[in-house]
Image (cartoon, rainbow, N blue to C red; front, side, top):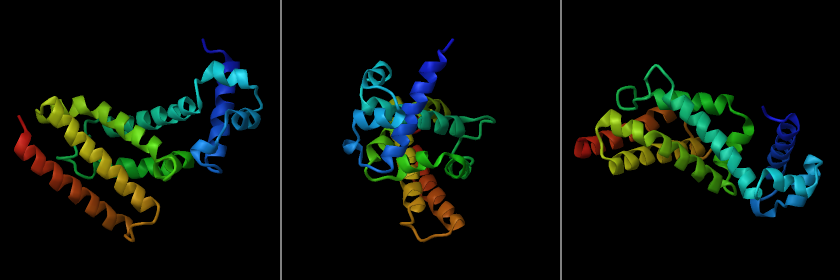
Amino acid sequence: MTDRRVVRTKQALREAFRKLAQQYRFREITVQQLTAEANINRKTFYLHFESIDDLADSFTAEIADQLLDLILQEPAEHDPLNNSGVWFARLDDFFEKAPKFYTFILTSDDYSFLSRRVKRRVAAGLTTSFQQDYQLSAVDAQMGVNFLIDSTLTLFRLYITGQLDLSLPAFKQRLVTLNMRGLQGFLGDFRG
């Protein structure tokens, strides 16, 4: 059973980080600022997190887990080759419904290191599935998944931040085409 005080303290620290992250660059945030914003003392911070980086990483785990749940949800439509728009639809839904802070983390230049952590966690979570679904070696599955995750999230980042002057349907068409042609070529050459 989880102690409610622990839960409240972690929530207060996470909320403080959300607020400060949108005001300051990551390296400008201090434990003193976080604890003052959360209204707790410094020692309490270190009871729950080793560092500010550890606190920030709790968000990457949360975001990556939610993305994996969306991508791998049943029915087994997570096959981007045979259902090419499924990842797009699920990621678009994620960005529409996710807390604005998740979008901030995934699109902010200063917090891009957290976005890369999310990408790595999602790719690691999908590699085994890809290996089995497409009869790939572990290395080829890892490469294929990283290609799809990196290109998809990077292009969503460009779209969300207004760097791509496209309608949503035009963006979807281009993203799906790029991913499918790349994946189909790769699988054609390396499938077991």
